Image 1 (cartoon, rainbow, N blue to C red):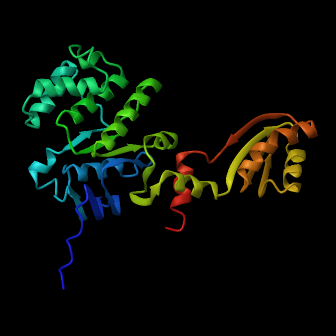
Image 2: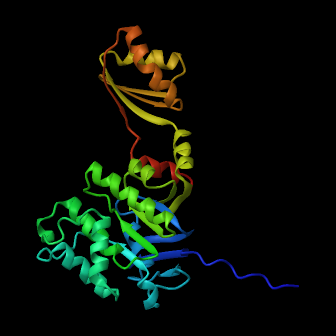
Image 3: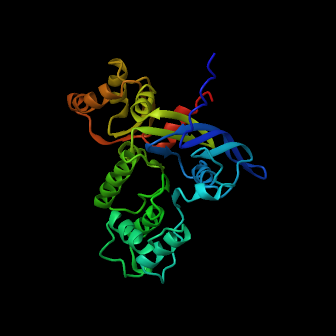
Length: 312
């Protein structure tokens, strides 16, 4: 009988990883595997994203469990750290250095053979080739973000860990960097990008990890996440001059599930969000009711986590 083949080595393999700081649990029993492509790590501030990234890069060890990159422990294996590129959330740049000097230091730290050529290539990838000799202290927040990204790319890593890399970028820059991430993923690199903005995650990649309160709340295709959200009741606040009349009509037509009235504010919940969206304006017009404001109260990131961690 032939022996069983060894299990595959994933580019990132996190198994039962927890990290505590005294009595504070930053990451709790997280497990997932990743290979080539782009994955978004979605979570609110304080959810444990940065701590998880630090463990992946070997900057701290898990209290419990294992964290492996390319089959190795980055904390103990110096060569594997050279195959990781990290763009941290913190804006810790040396403002007196030029963009070229800053990125070239990163190249030399990694022992890149031709540091100058690699630096120029990395700055070109992030569209900073025309400002290489300007001090980073004069850069906008978006440009500073791209300098950090160039430093993460300069050693041509197999693993890219990017912590909120799109923060501060204008729409054009965001589009360009998202295109770059997809290009890197298609080249066989494992690109893990954190964000706390739901719509941003939809554009980063279809593969999503959701972390809340230090725990992995969900993982899989972004479309499945949206479907899960759409199956939940939605909370909506409506400001109108006749809240009782409008609320009664919505209840009578079975468009909403629940209702609460506070002066000229109508708070409703509905499991039929599409029907509500199509019907609210025609019904208000039919009843001669003014609609001053219609605001989704749970179309934010916190509601996603409430839905996902329910019952966990």
